[in-house]
Image (tube, rainbow, N blue to C red; front, side, top):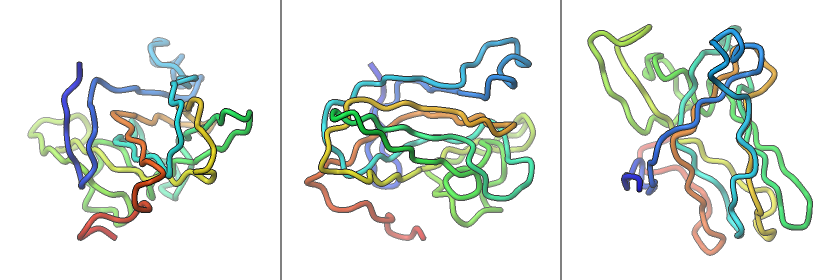
Length: 173
């Protein structure tokens, strides 16, 4: 069983994490990473997904770059691809979150001897389901083909169709 946690007014059941990386990068890191986790069962409708996570790397260009994605598989056979953009949705867990305006910082822990910097961060990523009327059969979590793609997923919460539309928590842009 996981631990119940609340970040930015969203409840999560935290049981571990999924750390993905592009195939070539995973091979160079002793092959201990995969580029996707497919077929996570859902079986219900949702207005959107709220993801708690981060990135294990930064975008080399330092420009907004798709470094991960969530693929929704609907019961009727259709799919939707929802991009995760470095600089908009998340940044590297060790980057100073105060340097960025768009990612929603959900958790921050300063560390004296952290790898690469002095902090660790998790971000809240809000993705709108383009077809809330359809049942989501399953989801896939994917790294992209972009070099240095390494999304980290800690928890995913579905926003039910009957719930209010996704909105920014108080005090967030």
